[in-house]
Image (cartoon, rainbow, N blue to C red; front, top):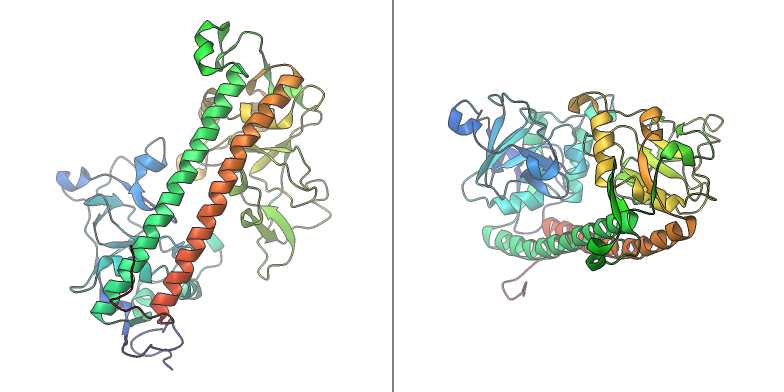
Length: 435
Protein backbone atom coordinates (compact mmCIF):
# COMPACT_ATOMS: atom_id res chain seq x y z
CA UNK A 1 0.00 0.00 0.00
CA UNK A 2 1.66 3.26 -1.10
CA UNK A 3 1.98 6.18 1.25
CA UNK A 4 3.79 9.53 1.30
CA UNK A 5 6.94 9.05 -0.74
CA UNK A 6 9.34 10.90 -2.96
CA UNK A 7 6.74 10.60 -5.69
CA UNK A 8 4.13 12.43 -3.69
CA UNK A 9 1.19 12.14 -1.38
CA UNK A 10 -0.79 9.23 -2.72
CA UNK A 11 -4.48 9.93 -3.26
CA UNK A 12 -5.61 6.28 -3.36
CA UNK A 13 -5.20 3.49 -0.83
CA UNK A 14 -3.62 1.17 -3.38
CA UNK A 15 -2.54 0.91 -7.03
CA UNK A 16 -4.76 -1.32 -9.21
CA UNK A 17 -3.09 -4.22 -11.00
CA UNK A 18 -1.33 -3.11 -14.17
CA UNK A 19 -1.42 0.60 -13.25
CA UNK A 20 1.55 2.79 -12.34
CA UNK A 21 2.03 5.08 -9.37
CA UNK A 22 3.10 8.52 -10.55
CA UNK A 23 3.05 12.10 -9.27
CA UNK A 24 1.07 14.87 -10.95
CA UNK A 25 4.44 16.39 -11.80
CA UNK A 26 5.03 13.35 -14.04
CA UNK A 27 1.86 14.14 -15.97
CA UNK A 28 1.87 17.94 -16.13
CA UNK A 29 4.22 20.78 -17.05
CA UNK A 30 3.77 24.16 -15.36
CA UNK A 31 3.11 27.03 -17.77
CA UNK A 32 3.31 30.75 -17.03
CA UNK A 33 2.71 32.60 -20.27
CA UNK A 34 1.68 36.22 -19.73
CA UNK A 35 -0.29 38.47 -22.08
CA UNK A 36 2.80 40.47 -22.93
CA UNK A 37 1.95 41.24 -26.56
CA UNK A 38 -1.02 43.03 -28.16
CA UNK A 39 -1.99 39.75 -29.84
CA UNK A 40 -2.17 37.90 -26.52
CA UNK A 41 -3.92 40.79 -24.78
CA UNK A 42 -6.62 40.47 -27.42
CA UNK A 43 -7.54 36.96 -26.28
CA UNK A 44 -10.92 36.62 -24.54
CA UNK A 45 -10.95 36.75 -20.74
CA UNK A 46 -12.19 33.49 -19.22
CA UNK A 47 -13.90 32.76 -15.93
CA UNK A 48 -13.40 29.52 -13.98
CA UNK A 49 -16.64 27.95 -12.73
CA UNK A 50 -17.09 24.82 -10.64
CA UNK A 51 -19.70 23.17 -12.84
CA UNK A 52 -19.26 24.64 -16.33
CA UNK A 53 -15.47 24.76 -16.43
CA UNK A 54 -13.63 27.60 -18.13
CA UNK A 55 -16.12 29.83 -19.92
CA UNK A 56 -16.08 33.27 -21.49
CA UNK A 57 -16.31 35.89 -18.77
CA UNK A 58 -18.99 37.61 -20.85
CA UNK A 59 -21.19 34.51 -20.45
CA UNK A 60 -20.99 34.69 -16.67
CA UNK A 61 -21.11 38.41 -15.98
CA UNK A 62 -23.11 41.22 -17.53
CA UNK A 63 -20.11 43.53 -17.24
CA UNK A 64 -16.34 43.29 -17.45
CA UNK A 65 -14.78 41.99 -14.24
CA UNK A 66 -11.17 41.86 -15.45
CA UNK A 67 -9.24 45.09 -15.22
CA UNK A 68 -8.43 47.01 -18.40
CA UNK A 69 -4.71 46.21 -18.25
CA UNK A 70 -4.48 42.42 -18.62
CA UNK A 71 -0.78 42.28 -19.43
CA UNK A 72 -0.09 40.18 -16.31
CA UNK A 73 -2.99 37.79 -16.98
CA UNK A 74 -2.02 34.23 -17.82
CA UNK A 75 -2.60 32.54 -21.16
CA UNK A 76 -4.36 29.18 -21.12
CA UNK A 77 -4.70 27.14 -24.29
CA UNK A 78 -7.16 24.41 -25.21
CA UNK A 79 -6.06 21.19 -23.49
CA UNK A 80 -4.28 23.02 -20.66
CA UNK A 81 -5.36 22.72 -17.03
CA UNK A 82 -6.18 25.73 -14.85
CA UNK A 83 -7.12 25.94 -11.21
CA UNK A 84 -7.84 28.54 -8.57
CA UNK A 85 -5.57 27.64 -5.63
CA UNK A 86 -7.99 29.18 -3.14
CA UNK A 87 -11.03 27.04 -4.02
CA UNK A 88 -9.44 24.09 -5.85
CA UNK A 89 -10.84 21.78 -3.19
CA UNK A 90 -14.37 22.86 -4.18
CA UNK A 91 -13.77 21.71 -7.75
CA UNK A 92 -12.46 24.94 -9.31
CA UNK A 93 -10.07 23.02 -11.56
CA UNK A 94 -10.70 22.32 -15.25
CA UNK A 95 -9.08 21.69 -18.62
CA UNK A 96 -9.94 24.29 -21.26
CA UNK A 97 -12.02 22.77 -24.05
CA UNK A 98 -13.07 25.90 -25.95
CA UNK A 99 -12.07 28.48 -27.13
CA UNK A 100 -8.61 27.74 -28.56
CA UNK A 101 -6.99 30.12 -26.06
CA UNK A 102 -7.93 32.72 -23.47
CA UNK A 103 -6.74 34.76 -20.51
CA UNK A 104 -7.26 33.96 -16.84
CA UNK A 105 -6.50 35.65 -13.54
CA UNK A 106 -2.79 35.80 -12.63
CA UNK A 107 -3.77 34.02 -9.39
CA UNK A 108 -4.54 30.80 -11.28
CA UNK A 109 -2.00 28.05 -11.86
CA UNK A 110 -1.72 26.70 -15.40
CA UNK A 111 -0.46 23.27 -16.52
CA UNK A 112 0.03 21.52 -19.85
CA UNK A 113 -0.31 17.73 -20.01
CA UNK A 114 2.93 16.01 -20.98
CA UNK A 115 3.24 14.23 -24.30
CA UNK A 116 1.10 11.10 -24.42
CA UNK A 117 -1.26 12.27 -21.65
CA UNK A 118 -4.78 13.00 -22.88
CA UNK A 119 -6.04 16.35 -21.50
CA UNK A 120 -9.53 14.87 -21.14
CA UNK A 121 -8.13 12.15 -18.88
CA UNK A 122 -6.51 14.82 -16.72
CA UNK A 123 -9.79 16.76 -16.64
CA UNK A 124 -11.55 13.74 -15.16
CA UNK A 125 -8.72 12.69 -12.86
CA UNK A 126 -8.53 16.00 -10.98
CA UNK A 127 -12.27 15.89 -10.26
CA UNK A 128 -12.24 12.48 -8.55
CA UNK A 129 -13.54 12.57 -4.98
CA UNK A 130 -10.24 11.49 -3.42
CA UNK A 131 -8.38 14.18 -5.42
CA UNK A 132 -10.68 16.90 -4.12
CA UNK A 133 -10.18 15.50 -0.61
CA UNK A 134 -6.42 15.64 -1.10
CA UNK A 135 -6.63 19.24 -2.34
CA UNK A 136 -8.58 20.12 0.79
CA UNK A 137 -6.11 18.30 3.03
CA UNK A 138 -3.17 20.16 1.52
CA UNK A 139 -4.81 23.61 1.52
CA UNK A 140 -3.68 25.86 4.33
CA UNK A 141 -4.91 29.14 5.77
CA UNK A 142 -6.99 30.40 8.69
CA UNK A 143 -9.88 31.75 6.60
CA UNK A 144 -11.95 29.14 4.75
CA UNK A 145 -12.27 31.09 1.50
CA UNK A 146 -8.55 31.97 1.53
CA UNK A 147 -7.18 28.49 2.12
CA UNK A 148 -4.81 27.68 -0.71
CA UNK A 149 -2.71 24.80 -1.96
CA UNK A 150 0.98 25.29 -2.64
CA UNK A 151 2.13 24.62 -6.16
CA UNK A 152 4.83 22.26 -4.93
CA UNK A 153 2.30 20.25 -2.92
CA UNK A 154 0.05 19.96 -5.97
CA UNK A 155 2.97 18.58 -7.99
CA UNK A 156 3.75 15.96 -5.33
CA UNK A 157 0.29 14.39 -5.24
CA UNK A 158 0.56 10.74 -6.29
CA UNK A 159 -2.02 9.12 -8.55
CA UNK A 160 -2.61 5.73 -10.13
CA UNK A 161 -2.13 5.86 -13.90
CA UNK A 162 -3.83 3.24 -16.10
CA UNK A 163 -2.10 2.05 -19.29
CA UNK A 164 -2.87 4.12 -22.44
CA UNK A 165 -5.53 1.80 -23.87
CA UNK A 166 -7.46 1.74 -20.58
CA UNK A 167 -7.13 5.51 -20.22
CA UNK A 168 -8.74 5.86 -23.63
CA UNK A 169 -11.68 3.67 -22.59
CA UNK A 170 -12.13 5.62 -19.35
CA UNK A 171 -12.16 8.95 -21.20
CA UNK A 172 -14.70 7.63 -23.71
CA UNK A 173 -17.03 6.36 -21.00
CA UNK A 174 -16.84 9.51 -18.89
CA UNK A 175 -17.15 11.81 -21.90
CA UNK A 176 -20.41 10.07 -22.81
CA UNK A 177 -21.70 10.67 -19.28
CA UNK A 178 -20.50 14.28 -19.36
CA UNK A 179 -22.55 14.95 -22.49
CA UNK A 180 -25.63 13.61 -20.71
CA UNK A 181 -24.94 15.91 -17.76
CA UNK A 182 -24.44 18.86 -20.11
CA UNK A 183 -27.76 18.09 -21.79
CA UNK A 184 -29.49 17.96 -18.40
CA UNK A 185 -27.87 21.25 -17.44
CA UNK A 186 -29.17 22.74 -20.69
CA UNK A 187 -32.68 21.50 -19.93
CA UNK A 188 -32.53 23.09 -16.49
CA UNK A 189 -31.37 26.39 -17.99
CA UNK A 190 -34.25 26.25 -20.49
CA UNK A 191 -36.76 25.60 -17.69
CA UNK A 192 -35.35 28.50 -15.67
CA UNK A 193 -35.52 30.77 -18.71
CA UNK A 194 -39.12 29.74 -19.39
CA UNK A 195 -40.06 30.38 -15.76
CA UNK A 196 -38.46 33.84 -15.87
CA UNK A 197 -40.30 34.69 -19.11
CA UNK A 198 -43.63 33.51 -17.70
CA UNK A 199 -43.05 35.44 -14.47
CA UNK A 200 -42.25 38.72 -16.22
CA UNK A 201 -45.31 38.48 -18.47
CA UNK A 202 -47.70 37.60 -15.65
CA UNK A 203 -46.40 40.36 -13.36
CA UNK A 204 -46.73 42.95 -16.15
CA UNK A 205 -49.95 41.83 -17.81
CA UNK A 206 -51.63 39.21 -15.63
CA UNK A 207 -53.57 36.57 -17.53
CA UNK A 208 -53.66 38.64 -20.72
CA UNK A 209 -52.32 36.34 -23.48
CA UNK A 210 -49.18 37.42 -25.34
CA UNK A 211 -51.11 37.89 -28.58
CA UNK A 212 -53.64 40.19 -26.85
CA UNK A 213 -51.11 42.54 -25.23
CA UNK A 214 -51.00 44.93 -28.26
CA UNK A 215 -54.78 45.38 -27.90
CA UNK A 216 -54.68 45.86 -24.10
CA UNK A 217 -54.50 49.17 -22.26
CA UNK A 218 -50.84 49.37 -21.21
CA UNK A 219 -48.91 52.24 -19.62
CA UNK A 220 -45.17 52.85 -19.55
CA UNK A 221 -44.24 53.07 -15.88
CA UNK A 222 -40.97 53.64 -14.04
CA UNK A 223 -40.50 49.86 -14.16
CA UNK A 224 -41.45 49.31 -17.78
CA UNK A 225 -44.76 48.49 -19.45
CA UNK A 226 -47.57 47.29 -17.18
CA UNK A 227 -51.27 46.80 -17.66
CA UNK A 228 -53.07 50.06 -17.00
CA UNK A 229 -55.15 48.71 -14.10
CA UNK A 230 -52.01 47.98 -12.06
CA UNK A 231 -50.83 50.50 -9.47
CA UNK A 232 -47.09 50.96 -9.05
CA UNK A 233 -46.11 51.06 -5.38
CA UNK A 234 -42.98 50.97 -3.25
CA UNK A 235 -42.14 47.73 -1.47
CA UNK A 236 -41.96 49.64 1.81
CA UNK A 237 -45.67 50.48 1.54
CA UNK A 238 -46.55 46.78 1.63
CA UNK A 239 -44.54 45.71 4.69
CA UNK A 240 -46.19 44.56 7.90
CA UNK A 241 -42.94 44.95 9.85
CA UNK A 242 -39.56 46.64 9.23
CA UNK A 243 -36.99 45.05 6.94
CA UNK A 244 -34.49 42.90 8.83
CA UNK A 245 -30.87 41.97 8.13
CA UNK A 246 -29.76 38.48 9.04
CA UNK A 247 -26.80 37.32 11.11
CA UNK A 248 -23.58 35.66 10.00
CA UNK A 249 -21.42 33.50 12.21
CA UNK A 250 -18.44 31.21 11.67
CA UNK A 251 -19.14 27.93 9.97
CA UNK A 252 -19.16 25.05 12.42
CA UNK A 253 -16.09 22.79 12.05
CA UNK A 254 -17.92 19.66 13.20
CA UNK A 255 -21.21 20.01 11.32
CA UNK A 256 -23.20 20.90 14.44
CA UNK A 257 -24.78 24.23 15.25
CA UNK A 258 -27.42 26.50 13.74
CA UNK A 259 -28.58 25.78 10.16
CA UNK A 260 -28.01 28.95 8.15
CA UNK A 261 -28.93 29.74 4.55
CA UNK A 262 -26.20 30.18 2.01
CA UNK A 263 -26.54 33.08 -0.39
CA UNK A 264 -27.09 30.55 -3.19
CA UNK A 265 -30.45 29.62 -1.67
CA UNK A 266 -31.78 32.94 -2.93
CA UNK A 267 -29.57 33.20 -6.01
CA UNK A 268 -30.89 29.85 -7.26
CA UNK A 269 -34.30 30.09 -5.56
CA UNK A 270 -33.52 26.74 -3.97
CA UNK A 271 -34.15 26.54 -0.22
CA UNK A 272 -33.12 22.90 0.07
CA UNK A 273 -30.53 21.46 2.43
CA UNK A 274 -27.83 21.71 -0.22
CA UNK A 275 -27.92 25.49 0.33
CA UNK A 276 -27.58 25.61 4.10
CA UNK A 277 -24.52 25.38 6.31
CA UNK A 278 -24.13 24.84 10.05
CA UNK A 279 -22.78 27.85 11.94
CA UNK A 280 -21.70 28.73 15.46
CA UNK A 281 -24.40 31.39 15.81
CA UNK A 282 -25.53 32.22 19.36
CA UNK A 283 -29.13 30.93 19.64
CA UNK A 284 -30.13 33.93 21.78
CA UNK A 285 -29.01 36.35 19.06
CA UNK A 286 -30.87 34.65 16.22
CA UNK A 287 -34.15 33.67 17.88
CA UNK A 288 -36.06 36.11 15.63
CA UNK A 289 -34.26 35.11 12.42
CA UNK A 290 -35.77 31.67 11.85
CA UNK A 291 -37.42 31.26 8.45
CA UNK A 292 -41.19 31.43 8.24
CA UNK A 293 -43.36 30.57 5.26
CA UNK A 294 -43.86 33.67 3.11
CA UNK A 295 -40.60 35.38 4.10
CA UNK A 296 -39.09 37.25 1.15
CA UNK A 297 -35.30 37.48 1.02
CA UNK A 298 -33.32 40.07 -0.93
CA UNK A 299 -29.56 39.84 -1.46
CA UNK A 300 -28.09 43.07 -0.12
CA UNK A 301 -24.62 42.19 -1.39
CA UNK A 302 -23.36 40.17 -4.33
CA UNK A 303 -21.87 40.79 -7.75
CA UNK A 304 -23.39 43.80 -9.49
CA UNK A 305 -25.68 41.71 -11.69
CA UNK A 306 -26.89 39.58 -8.75
CA UNK A 307 -27.24 42.14 -5.94
CA UNK A 308 -30.93 42.54 -5.12
CA UNK A 309 -31.84 39.02 -6.27
CA UNK A 310 -35.05 38.05 -4.47
CA UNK A 311 -36.90 34.84 -3.62
CA UNK A 312 -39.66 33.76 -1.28
CA UNK A 313 -39.37 30.92 1.22
CA UNK A 314 -42.36 28.55 1.14
CA UNK A 315 -41.07 25.67 3.23
CA UNK A 316 -41.55 24.57 6.82
CA UNK A 317 -41.16 27.06 9.67
CA UNK A 318 -37.85 27.25 11.56
CA UNK A 319 -35.93 25.37 8.86
CA UNK A 320 -32.89 27.69 9.17
CA UNK A 321 -31.87 31.25 9.91
CA UNK A 322 -30.66 33.71 7.29
CA UNK A 323 -27.23 35.39 7.03
CA UNK A 324 -26.26 39.06 7.16
CA UNK A 325 -25.99 39.29 3.36
CA UNK A 326 -29.76 38.79 3.12
CA UNK A 327 -32.55 41.17 4.05
CA UNK A 328 -35.94 39.77 5.08
CA UNK A 329 -39.18 41.40 3.94
CA UNK A 330 -42.57 40.43 5.39
CA UNK A 331 -45.56 41.86 3.54
CA UNK A 332 -49.09 42.54 4.67
CA UNK A 333 -50.87 39.49 3.21
CA UNK A 334 -54.17 41.38 3.14
CA UNK A 335 -52.69 43.63 0.43
CA UNK A 336 -49.89 41.62 -1.12
CA UNK A 337 -49.10 37.98 -1.90
CA UNK A 338 -45.50 37.23 -0.88
CA UNK A 339 -44.82 34.97 -3.88
CA UNK A 340 -46.13 37.63 -6.25
CA UNK A 341 -44.03 40.36 -4.61
CA UNK A 342 -40.85 38.27 -4.78
CA UNK A 343 -41.43 37.69 -8.50
CA UNK A 344 -42.18 41.39 -9.10
CA UNK A 345 -38.85 42.28 -7.49
CA UNK A 346 -37.18 40.23 -10.24
CA UNK A 347 -38.51 42.39 -13.10
CA UNK A 348 -35.58 43.51 -15.30
CA UNK A 349 -36.15 47.18 -14.47
CA UNK A 350 -36.16 46.46 -10.73
CA UNK A 351 -32.99 44.41 -11.14
CA UNK A 352 -31.40 47.39 -12.94
CA UNK A 353 -32.52 49.69 -10.13
CA UNK A 354 -30.81 47.52 -7.52
CA UNK A 355 -27.66 47.17 -9.64
CA UNK A 356 -27.27 50.89 -10.28
CA UNK A 357 -28.08 51.75 -6.65
CA UNK A 358 -25.44 49.39 -5.26
CA UNK A 359 -22.36 50.98 -3.70
CA UNK A 360 -18.87 49.57 -3.96
CA UNK A 361 -16.63 47.97 -6.55
CA UNK A 362 -16.93 44.56 -8.13
CA UNK A 363 -14.06 43.34 -5.94
CA UNK A 364 -15.81 44.38 -2.71
CA UNK A 365 -19.29 42.98 -3.49
CA UNK A 366 -21.52 46.00 -4.26
CA UNK A 367 -24.18 46.52 -1.58
CA UNK A 368 -27.65 47.97 -1.28
CA UNK A 369 -29.20 49.14 1.99
CA UNK A 370 -32.68 48.86 3.44
CA UNK A 371 -33.66 52.29 2.14
CA UNK A 372 -32.87 51.25 -1.42
CA UNK A 373 -34.81 48.02 -0.96
CA UNK A 374 -37.86 49.67 0.57
CA UNK A 375 -38.06 52.12 -2.34
CA UNK A 376 -38.11 49.41 -5.00
CA UNK A 377 -41.19 49.77 -7.19
CA UNK A 378 -43.52 46.93 -8.17
CA UNK A 379 -46.80 46.75 -10.11
CA UNK A 380 -49.65 45.77 -7.81
CA UNK A 381 -52.94 44.27 -9.04
CA UNK A 382 -55.77 43.27 -6.73
CA UNK A 383 -54.93 40.51 -4.18
CA UNK A 384 -57.01 37.85 -5.95
CA UNK A 385 -55.12 38.40 -9.20
CA UNK A 386 -51.80 38.37 -7.34
CA UNK A 387 -52.63 34.95 -5.99
CA UNK A 388 -53.61 33.66 -9.44
CA UNK A 389 -50.36 34.97 -10.89
CA UNK A 390 -48.36 33.41 -8.04
CA UNK A 391 -49.98 30.00 -8.55
CA UNK A 392 -49.31 30.10 -12.30
CA UNK A 393 -45.66 30.87 -11.64
CA UNK A 394 -45.46 27.98 -9.16
CA UNK A 395 -46.41 25.66 -12.03
CA UNK A 396 -43.29 26.82 -13.88
CA UNK A 397 -41.32 26.48 -10.63
CA UNK A 398 -42.27 22.82 -10.41
CA UNK A 399 -40.76 22.18 -13.82
CA UNK A 400 -37.53 23.83 -12.68
CA UNK A 401 -37.46 21.64 -9.56
CA UNK A 402 -38.02 18.52 -11.66
CA UNK A 403 -35.19 19.42 -14.04
CA UNK A 404 -32.90 20.23 -11.11
CA UNK A 405 -33.61 16.87 -9.49
CA UNK A 406 -32.86 15.08 -12.75
CA UNK A 407 -29.59 16.98 -13.14
CA UNK A 408 -28.63 16.08 -9.57
CA UNK A 409 -29.27 12.40 -10.26
CA UNK A 410 -27.25 12.38 -13.48
CA UNK A 411 -24.41 14.39 -11.93
CA UNK A 412 -24.31 11.97 -8.99
CA UNK A 413 -24.09 9.06 -11.42
CA UNK A 414 -21.23 10.79 -13.23
CA UNK A 415 -19.34 11.30 -9.98
CA UNK A 416 -19.85 7.68 -8.94
CA UNK A 417 -18.73 6.34 -12.32
CA UNK A 418 -15.70 8.63 -12.33
CA UNK A 419 -14.60 7.44 -8.90
CA UNK A 420 -15.08 3.77 -9.79
CA UNK A 421 -13.23 3.98 -13.11
CA UNK A 422 -10.34 6.12 -11.89
CA UNK A 423 -9.82 3.97 -8.79
CA UNK A 424 -9.84 0.75 -10.79
CA UNK A 425 -12.87 -0.54 -8.87
CA UNK A 426 -14.56 -1.01 -12.23
CA UNK A 427 -12.36 -2.06 -15.15
CA UNK A 428 -13.33 -1.53 -18.78
CA UNK A 429 -12.69 -3.69 -21.83
CA UNK A 430 -12.76 -2.79 -25.55
CA UNK A 431 -16.09 -4.61 -25.89
CA UNK A 432 -17.88 -2.16 -23.54
CA UNK A 433 -20.42 0.02 -25.38
CA UNK A 434 -20.48 3.74 -24.55
CA UNK A 435 -22.95 4.88 -27.18
